[in-house]
Amino acid sequence: MTQSKGLVYIRRFVIVLAVLAIYIWAFAGLPTLELKETSIEVISAILAGIFSPDWGYVYDPGGEDLLRGLLDTVAIAILGTFIAGILCIPFAFMAANNIMKNKAVVGINKFILSFIRVFPDIVLALLFIKAVGPGEFAGVLALGIGAIGMLGKLISESIENVDLSAKEALIATGANPIKTFIFAIVPQVLPNYFSFVMYRLEVNMRAATVLGVIGAGGIGTPLIFALSVRDWERVGIILLGIIVMVTIVDIISSKVRARFT
Image 1 (cartoon, rainbow, N blue to C red):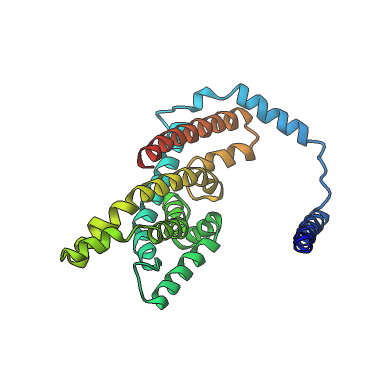
Image 2 (image 1 turned 90 degrees about the horizontal axis):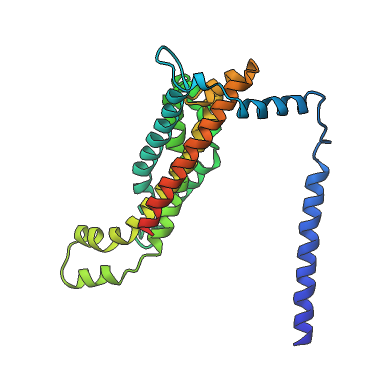
């Protein structure tokens, strides 16, 4: 007994040493962090812009303004989430071991979902910008396709954890496969499905802001322009708008998810 405890302690000690060695190796490869002479000046200017923002940019009937940029960002995130929420369903069910008995089909769909998750949203956005041109459409495609991998994986795992006793009971009463699927499987998966979709909407809302910086539409486009010309007051009002937008979406999403969990 004492010997086995000693082996456990030695094993844990070796693991801790290995983790520490990895961290030391990783940090050793980082370049030396140095603040430029203008860094403090730029940070101070950004903070000053936040506390004295350009309120005139909030709404401009004759041109581009903050509200239009925020609405474009919200639209990109919602449409991207909607596309992913629909397209992930067949992949999720075909990747679930308890629904799809063909192991080859399950393996192929799990591989497809993993393959999609490899690409960050910003990489997909760059690809779609090259394919369809810069703008909101590229952002919608990037978020829609990119979210399929995550949603498909989460929903397939939820499907694999369903209680199959209801399905067996319906089969015993003579229900056909379609009715069995609709009344035994779907009601158990639906709450988690809506919860995952709303969570992904929160993620896409932040991602849509970043994608605009590289030309995929939304509020990120005027933000990068304001940064390039050092218009800190406009940067400040855009950052405040993003904070308010993300906070409101987070609150709404949390309330919706609370009703389904």
